[in-house]
Image 1 (tube, rainbow, N blue to C red):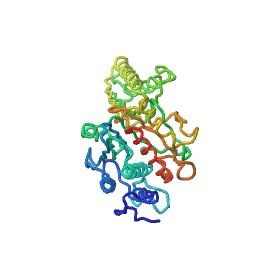
Image 2: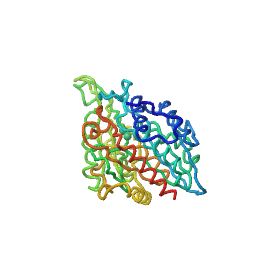
Image 3: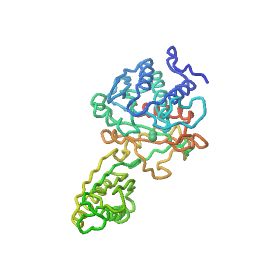
Image 4: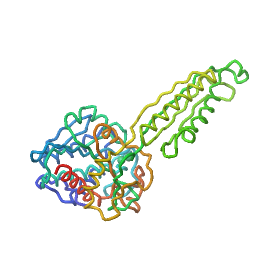
Length: 393
Ligand SMILES: [Zn+2]
Ligand SMILES: [Zn+2]
């Protein structure tokens, strides 16, 4: 494999060079917010094509700015750069060289797609306005987008709209999903801590046992999805951990549980949170215990804006055959994506590109055998070029 990808002499590398770049990033994954080498590689290439590069936004985040013509419109496109803390089990030449780190979600590919689009847009300049290419770390930790926003991303780089994409294994290359409305789930970590009064297992009358309270709470919480929400309100409520006691003859002082709550709209999330609060208050009164409830939002629901979704669909329509540009996900997804924070700030759309089928490309993301499909680099880059030329016409 040819690894001399970073031709400094060539203004616009060809597709083969971008495949090399993708494989370089894949072989040297970086985790979370700690992406200095990937960010440096991106910055160096953007500068070589004439972009004004702004580094260290919310950590290692960076923005490449390219202005053309006299247009006042502004467009943001985001690519994510981080990998996952896991061992890669693939044996091919570009497999991760770092134990415990792997690009198992294809962010190596998303970064490369945006670079390939950047190169072409700088060479052809068929747009009128300002392009802000946003390279974000720590998507997997659901912290990178928020960190960049909190560091003034949209004040410093105004964007009339923002867009992002993700590859989708199991869907053929050449198929994409551009869906309006709720598209990815919110994620919330809920902790419930029950404080009673412990004592000897032989004398329960002298205690306030938190264990039956825990059991009752488990049952009550199951009724939220089945009895409180309507069928069209999507939610997953999973109790992932329960803790109480040590040995058979001691009634413990405390019991606790951890719950994952996912929904596809903030309204459904609010409804669940309200009901959880009521259930907890009711149990305090019924059982005479004290219950602490903490709800931490990890990411909001990702909701694509109607107008921008339609603009994206029109921009992409020349690239996809009839029936390959889908307007609905084949299956409801309850995974999360922190681009949702950007869509709370600016209108936009997050869409999916089929990563193909077969051994590596059809393999689920976050699996040790997954690999991003290099065939998507050219197609993905054309998607961003078409969007930029259409949005900044
Ligand atoms: Zn992921
Ligand atoms: Zn991902």
